[in-house]
Amino acid sequence: MLSSKNMKLVAIAFVIFYLLSQPANAANVVNNAFSALGDAGDSLATFVNRLG
Image (cartoon, rainbow, N blue to C red):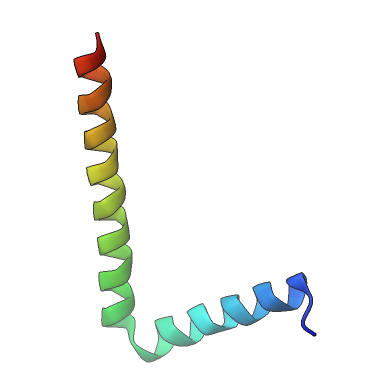
């Protein structure tokens, strides 16, 4: 079986392959991830502001 270290290396290799083979799609994934984080931050800020 693959160890945890080997699984991490396989995952990193897959990410590098994806970035090199489809850079436009990889950029969209990153933009969507940061957009989701921004939305989550805005929602958390709204929640905290309404508490007090």
